[in-house]
Length: 210
Ligand code: HEC
Image 1 (cartoon, protein in one colour):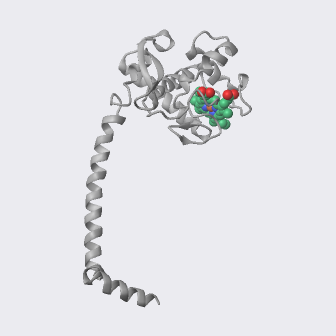
Image 2 (spheres, helix red, strand yellow):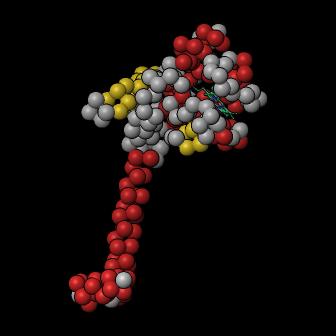
Image 3 (spheres, protein in one colour):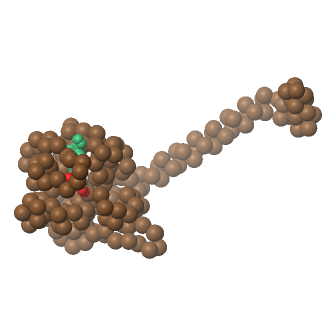
């Protein structure tokens, strides 16, 4: 039966399609074209994803207010960089901000926060996604009153140093023994992260509860 089908195919489609040389040439040509497209897309992405690029602000954005507004033409919430609002009330230079954020990244990597959390959806789903955590209405609504702190960043530092003391959920974050300097750096990292235009990820942030 199968050889009958093969004969029919050969007869129907003519000699060329049965020739392996045709398929090899086709595979090589397709791979070559796709490599060119891949190279173009990779280079093009840098315009968006490099620091200071179209979607990722420079590190000293932590000196500004960061809002989050729904953009109807894009059908996504986008960060809106506002007026001056220095983190911890202390304006930093671009180099100082870069140092602090790099330190925050090391803190987050060394404590394996991604064992429980996601960034840009990557990681584990035990805790909430942290990409927009800075913008979470829970800081002013729940954690500022709970910790007795008067600013979002101070409430975040207090929470990160003693998360076991300020639970809001049935899943608990353990105390990871962050020093105050480490918590500061992690908060700087989270503030910068929230200013990245993620095309609306995570969807329904701030509406879907946790
Ligand atoms: C063992 C799991 C676990 C690890 C590890 C962990 N977290 Fe959490 N985290 C949680 C859980 C669970 C919550 C929710 C706690 C609550 O609301 O009471 C949470 C909440 C948070 C929040 C508040 C998020 C929001 O917007 O509601 C932040 C910020 C945070 N974690 C940062 C971190 C950082 C930074 C690290 C690493 C230094 C880390 N977490 C490590 C489990 C974890």
